[in-house]
View 1 (cartoon, rainbow, N blue to C red):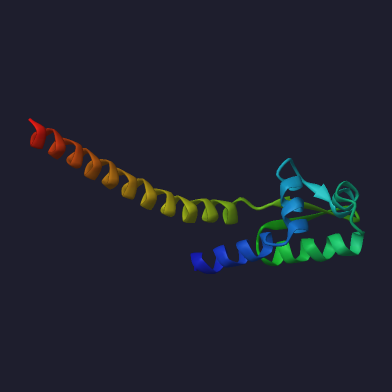
View 2: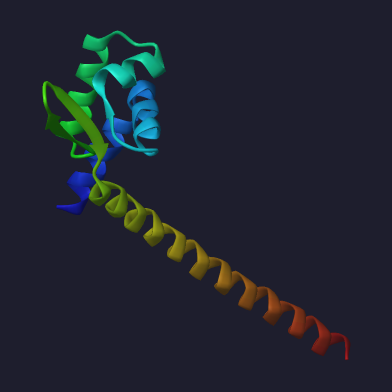
Length: 114
């Protein structure tokens, strides 16, 4: 299940305008019109990007009077962070093993000279 969410998240963020929308929403909720204006996009184009972001689970819309206010959903970003952290742990482990190996070589070299 997590892999599917990660894939949907990465696919949605692969498009530069959707990335820019997510970056805008990081600072707080906005309407379609506000997003379109700030990114200098047409409103239908902005709505299409928001629909894709919504389908991927990255954003959610809240109805307020006759407007829809979009905001980020935290879960997909937490899933992405967890996925990336698994790679970070892997590389830290590998670097730790490399440090140990280099120390062994250094110690071995000292013993050979000594």
